[in-house]
Length: 212
Ligand code: AP5
Image 1: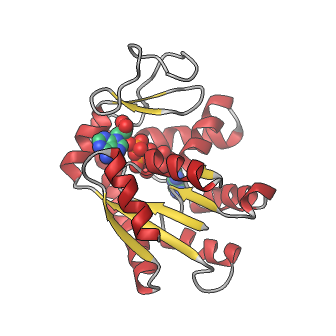
Image 2 (image 1 turned 45 degrees about the vertical axis):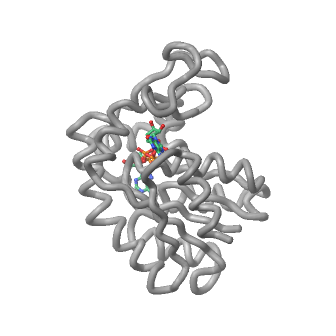
């Protein structure tokens, strides 16, 4: 199963993709997580990406395509994968086709539909674990113990790009650069539009149904 999750920031891509990857036994490949690791490690990639991410912009296509090319070449991606956050531009979508084969190359694409006003509320109360990347929401998916990760006890943090100004820019980038990617896959009849509203379990069931 070669899957792509598309959706605006905070629509639940990471939450759902992690869960589905666990269920299917395939890797969850998040370009956002990869970039955040690079920032933490202080690599060249991280130094280039940090200011762009903090402002809510998109990291240049050539850097992103290189990350995906290397990741898909790893043995665990041979049996399938879930891409979360890639492709985000038409150029990335075209490059991905060349990596996975002609046409849509067996790809299936899930687009999570969530209105912008809900996004802003979700992101304001999101917290994540800096160690393992687990995602929480202080109201809808709180940790068991106050503000620490259920898995490793690390103190949860808000992401630096979750400021109101950066979120506005990320939404704008989604509408202008990523929605055309959804249309690109719709034309190829591989796009499944899924209502991303309501409890996480309900959204997960809808995703599974859309893929069966
Ligand atoms: P990335 O990390 O991909 O961020 P994003 O697309 O903005 O998405 P988010 O991670 O913010 O949200 P999500 O949809 O995963 O939602 P989540 O599950 O966390 O990218 C970050 C940055 O990296 C980009 O801005 C860009 O700069 C750069 N980048 C990455 N990829 C790139 C690329 N390909 N090209 C160029 N640049 C790139 O959920 C959000 C919150 O809502 C959580 O608190 C969660 O608990 C809660 N929640 C989830 N589902 C529900 C529900 N059903 N009901 C209520 N709450 C819910």
